[in-house]
Length: 227
Ligand code: IYR
Image 1: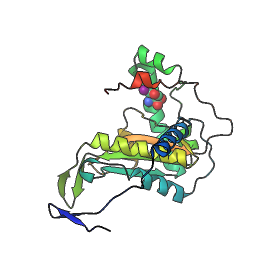
Image 2: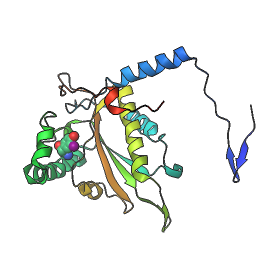
Image 3: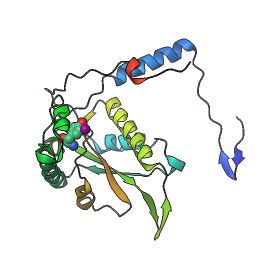
């Protein structure tokens, strides 16, 4: 084992991954893609209970995401309380009603037709857990503020990690973005440095769940190689 290395006065510890040959990295990358391709946004979430320990594991996984200067500028509010879920549903549906009846453009509403969404959000009460992700635009340490960096990128990455963790746990989720979302700060009594980022209902898929028949873009449409 090599020793700790000191950089700028801070310890850096040895890190290594087991060596995998070309065949193994090819299979591993293919298997991971095929597994991740099974993930779908699911709005038909069962009310079957999910243990708190599972939700803690999901958040621990999300919180391993890289972040600007390793500030981990996120807070996950984990809600199973029925009364709070009801309040969130009522407030979200009130905002969404306005959005679907005038705030969203005709083009936007047209783009959503294939997804099948409307202002009704029953999953906000049906799902056993709501994970509300807040971004910390700055830190509030004992009365004084300190900076966070690349907050949107960092919290977006943590949300991506969260979604893959949910998929790995055999559960489903959706990324809900009621707009505006400031009602979440009020209902959950968040401090002034936190802003709502994403609302993720989590649970088992309903036995008879449906998702839109979407196709993902082929690699030729999402990537350009420069070899
Ligand atoms: N926030 C609304 C509308 C909505 C917008 C997009 I872009 C979507 O991909 C899906 C829905 C809602 O949650 O219904």
